[in-house]
Image (cartoon, rainbow, N blue to C red; front, side):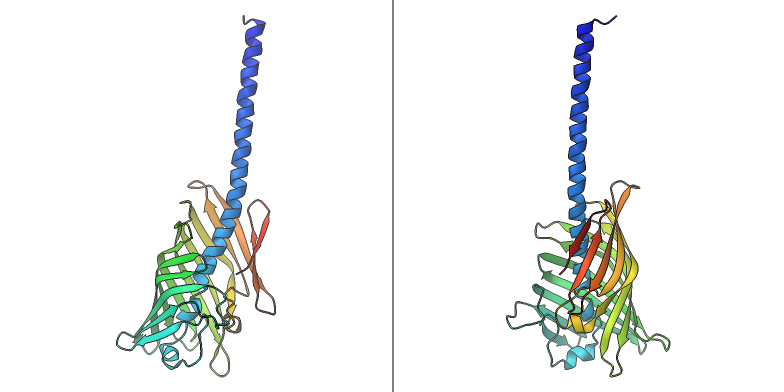
Length: 276
């Protein structure tokens, strides 16, 4: 039989262990709470990084050859006729009204024409940065014209890196479909995009994204420097283990003045509202 003093000491020991465990659990909860906000900001930044240069891929080689007006972001334009390559060089331009995002470095676009109905465009980021993020990698766009849908594009990319100001990177691969809409005069009015992504985030966790509703971009707003979509929704999953994940959704809305907001619904029920 145990004496009373031993039982009291054992009970005190158990109480101490329970107190430590409870404290640790509270710390874990706090860390998870912080991580969710970080994850929300990360998926917003990654989405913005991938969409802010989309417009340049849909301009034709002839459009770059004959451009006399200023492109959004005011890049310097160089056309290499031999290689059918366009180089966009971004820098600070004080009087550029459409430069609402700080951009630097280069984007190259090379055009390949398989036949009269098929165009391939390869987009490469060369020391390219916007805001506090850098991009590395290659995106491939393809247009196959048909009578029923002459303005339909597909896109693929593998292991695009989005690098933050601390040199931490998000690595993504994906597939997208883009539908362009033109006006009566042949000018681009808007385009919409759907697709999915897979990869890893800055902490090394597996992430996926599937679009719930197409993201729509208005050309008139892009001309003013607003690159976020006017409408759309997407679902992001961040995996804690191989099978266990949390889900965040993002919904986009736009006001009449072209200012868009991203409403990020975190998995714990909280909401973040972010804009470019």
